[in-house]
Image 1 (cartoon, rainbow, N blue to C red):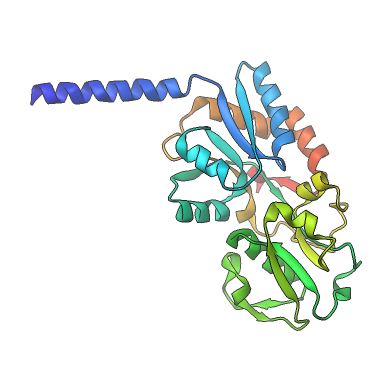
Image 2 (cartoon, rainbow, N blue to C red):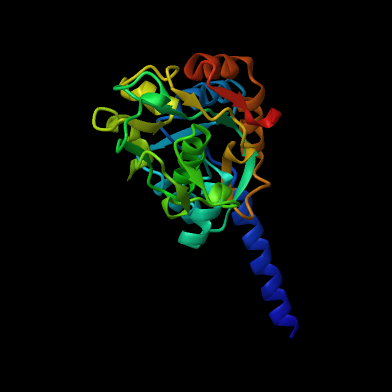
Length: 265
């Protein structure tokens, strides 16, 4: 029994040492193109303060969570809480929000029409194809008066929850990062200003309607694997992101007026 206890204690000590070692190298941060430029500024500021950070950019919204879950990176920044909750459910992940970043406006955009009331009978509307951001698009269509949703569906709305569609709009679902490219083909599209800016398809400030930041649930989060919340590198980096004047200036120049600091919500 004593030998077993000694072995257990030794294994626990080794586990603790390994955990500490995990926090000794560069902090690996995963993100997507829509959030990378301000993070690059934060990485540069962190280096000045003696913290090494590696930024890993992904092109989709699945790999960043898989990479945190597997320990390939330490944290990611690209998603809000409803998206994370769905990802954990669908992927069996053990991921948790660590700290808030920013909240972005999204809008309804058109290259064919200059006002919501010009959307024609039988027109085509593109929204995000994932269940969480698609709901955000449907809520925005309801705000525009183009559809109504069943009572109480809220942030989990799907196209099946449309209660009325007086213009008989054809609603198509498109991968969120590709919505900006759909504008030539549809009458109206849900749009993310940062992706529109990157794609250069339309002025991101020219939405026919914005969502007004009325849902604080959509604050983008720094996300880690549960059990890694005590990483001191992460605490320092998030503090730099949230409070460095240089990073704030980059956020302002990159997003313009179409964002708010999520930590002040």
